[in-house]
Image 1: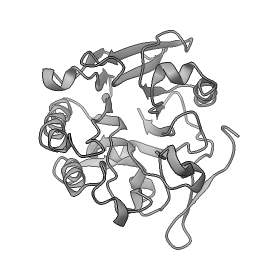
Image 2: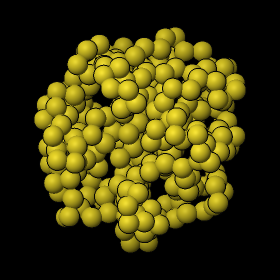
Image 3: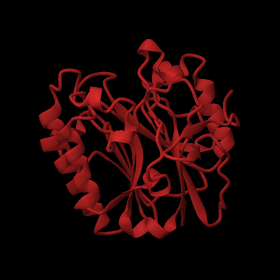
Length: 284
């Protein structure tokens, strides 16, 4: 069942985290943001799985969501912004839906570097309180053919871009960031050491964002060492049914937003993609 089904992930010791509970918030003083990699927007809407997004929208109300795709008017009451790949048709892309009542200062695309921006991987929404950045970070590839590009070029330039924004106001960065930071963020850490998303190069690169650039992994801010909290499961071998997954999707925030964070959570029971949605509630 979608929505109200309760799912629990076992943690260390007696800790448990409910990943599909209700998440009430105060619309006057708080924002609720939701991010979801739907694994191909056209295919997602073209099959039964599209109902899951409609159900999600109906339940969370006021939110912003990160999606891949090209459709603009599927969600009434929301303004859509799309950034599609121009290098290879259908290869990658991002989208943001913003409720009509929320008026952004500006919406921009890419990070201003052509070699990265042709793949449609970034959208930045400037709000009065902060910048909201949606990304679909490049995958290093099954043979790690893009590992050097990912860690030595894209990550470096993306972090510089985020820091440029952060000089003006706090940043919230979300999306499929294609890395499992901690050992507990992947079901089989020993067996995946040389797998894209869990190589030492990718993890060390991403840790710089936390250690050097002072960003907060909002989910771990609330659930520091809880296990089995995944956002992605491979389609093969019934990985989702076995709950053998990865945590690849995040809400990363500037350290200055620490006291404004109210909740960060995973909506594990929503189907329709190899990823599930995740949410953030933050004070205005």
